[in-house]
Length: 363
Image: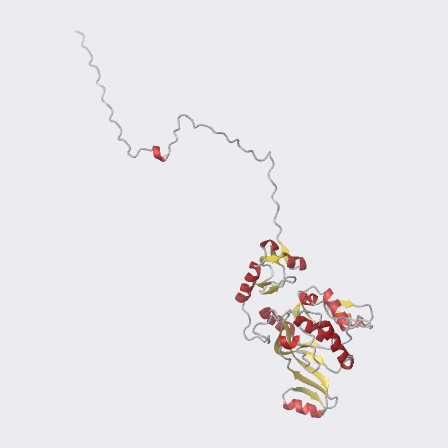
């Protein structure tokens, strides 16, 4: 999906990439926060990943980020390479540090390896801090689309630093991040003037965020093991199933309905409820399982409720109910209880011989 926040005609883009879903914004530049919010509104997938127009992804980036999200349930970000114009002295220092990937001495254009910071809940909660500025990731993160709605999306009133503000609000809402230690994003430092304008307004924007955050309540950290979200042992499907069972046991059975999961991916992957954030474990397209009604309403295209046909009561003509009467058994049938049965069966009597009369003789 491409959000077209530009006055230029997008015809060339559509001819080059005819398969994209273009979201035009009326030919007027509205700003990055506005454009990203419109993109999320048009999105239908349960996960989203932002990418600025001057950046690009490694071909395997989304797959690797998706796999780690399935293991952890956290927001995924990665290391990156940066393209910047630098002098030869800085290029030499970066080469000695092993971070210089490529350098053109004529154009002064360098490709530099960058390692993102680990996510620390406590440090994120203390932001924004001009003396200890903590930016742990780029705008390019993979996360559930529902998280965007949970925090109200991007602040469209900010002329810059809206992506930092966005990530800080996610952290304060209890959404944890985890770093994927691979360079999966290319970030250009030399294009556009928003970064320079943001640096000029940095003090005012920090004060604006501090005033805004003073009204919020920090939800706490959802990471395991304290402040760092680094993953040493990913959660297994069995662990996720146990977590799901605990969540489901605390909720009313009336809230769940049997559904068919209609995702086109038939392989097992982690399924998170878009509305309730219930972890339904590892599922594949076509499987049937219980789903919370709120998740069904939020994603009816993914959770197809099973329709149970109504059973109509039979008509009076179809069923004849016999009358119940206290009838006596026929006279030739004896009904005995076990107490009336004889304990010993008497031997049958021998038949007596009948003496035939002698015939009289007639002289």
